Amino acid sequence: MTDQTLAGRKVAVLATDGFEQSELEKPVEALKAAGAIVEVVSPKSGQIQGWEHHDKGRAVPVDRDLSTARPEDYQAIMLPGGVINPDALRLEPQAIDFIRHFVTEKKPIAAICHGPWTLINAGARPISRTPAPAGSIARLWSTTVWSPRASPMTCRRSAPR
Image 1 (tube, rainbow, N blue to C red):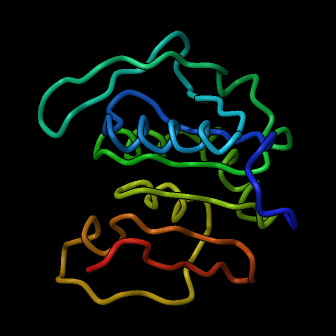
Image 2: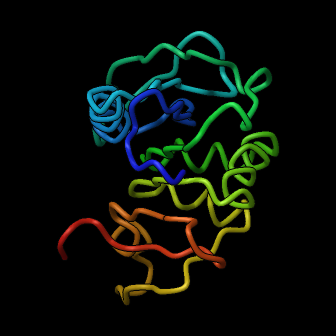
């Protein structure tokens, strides 16, 4: 994407049951406000269940079933976190293949909190890392933006420490 505006760009939000509510809804709102065409893509049809930390949150409608989604139709992907969501997605070969397209084609990828788990399974790797306490992947990757502008992928932390 040489044009840096999101207006008219199609963005896939890959998620399933167990996503963190704010990590899906807030970025979707921001993407839409910037003019992007956003589709929630999921291996589950109908709707997916969100969580607000330890409590059940709201369900979100699925716009496109993963089995019919073509990654070539999207210019970018956003991977929300939550502990359950990325853990379930990384066990879905079709989800990993979908993500791998964005990695190999060097399309923009945003992954929030635990979302990078799926990137690891898809073969992505950052070229720089921020040290974190042992066992703290959530702290290490909290609000990380992966940008496939260089090969191997580069990443930068978008939130202050």
